[in-house]
Image (cartoon, rainbow, N blue to C red; front, side, top):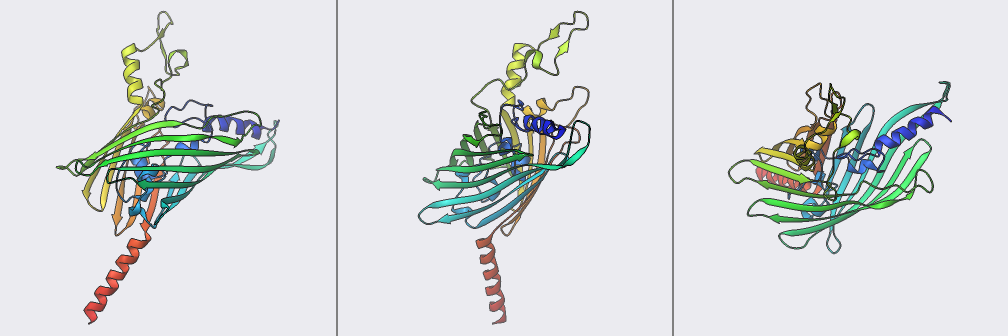
Length: 363
């Protein structure tokens, strides 16, 4: 057996843990939970509910897809851990009869690895990567309610191990324009692999149920966000002897378990992400968020870190949008998120207006 294959199996176990719960070995296609949008990453990840013209939210929440995103084009890139990187691209188009659609592609490149045998002799190289093609649809039911869904065709390849699968997301959004609030409910990654990495071995997708709430203050240029994830299960923490940070009494060598109240509140806040968005001008916004579950999962007792915090900014000038954010996981593990988007129709309108103004001046 080649050592490279051992490494691939270990890689499969590590990469199939869910981002929020990080319970290793339970799920495949975990990259479906990755944050592609810099704005979403800056707001702590998970479901985001905001009724605006930002196309970077559409892969995150298909019920937001609408006429306002017509001919929007966006690209995302993430400098992930070590040599890994990932990104996505999306185009949105509204058809008169069929409704509003978004077509997206996303990929994860884990890099190139050296394959060796049990004696350390090199036998070549292999790659590892994940890919998904998405078709998403959204419809405005009335001035307050909208629905959406997407279909993902998934392909994953780690050395000689390959898998194909299908997944579906279903979402709904309620918007109150007077109170400037939005509420979304989403069921994510309903699906199954069609071809497994190992024939005959069934594996689950990172299923999730999420709720997101956001509201902008009337008297402040601030919008707050609250998102809840993994609503189908309560326990999000390692409890008992499985807890890697479990402390023991120095005299009796007996484990010291947290109180039931401490366990309750820890689990409660692990389900919630808190974020604020500061909007000092129409073309500029800043994001700041705290993800309690991420902080607990990446907690190092001997050292204080910014694990669980994320922040970023977005600039939007004449339908051209640029975003950047950072999310802290652990010391030396702080991915950078970049996104660029534009609206083709809006830019053409601006170009025509500028030409008309020049003609008027000449006349």
